[in-house]
Image (cartoon, rainbow, N blue to C red; front, side, top):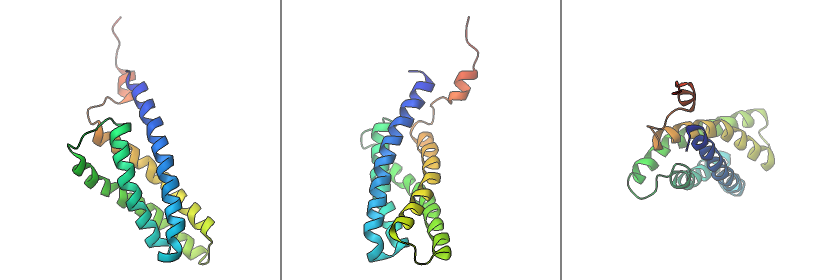
Length: 147
């Protein structure tokens, strides 16, 4: 499989898992926010979804199955969790200052917006961790071809 096709397949699988994880995250956030407040609901939902998302991406997106290295990957995912918490918590804090009485829909949309930025970072890091020797698509396309 060419580097471009492999990257395309990874992006599609990552997107499918990401959409499912995001929906679960937003549902959990909306359910937890009344009992815990926005920040704790955000962190709790993200923690649950990060473990699930990392496991699914490891297995299906990047074909890194088995138990070897699973603990290391979950520890690495804590870096991703910290990035996501920073993005979403920062967005929630901005919302709190702008509208302290924002409803669930606005709060949930704010979490979703923070997740968009974190998702791009997540894909890049996961791809590097799971396929460190995978050729870069740009490098593969710019390499001279034999005639």
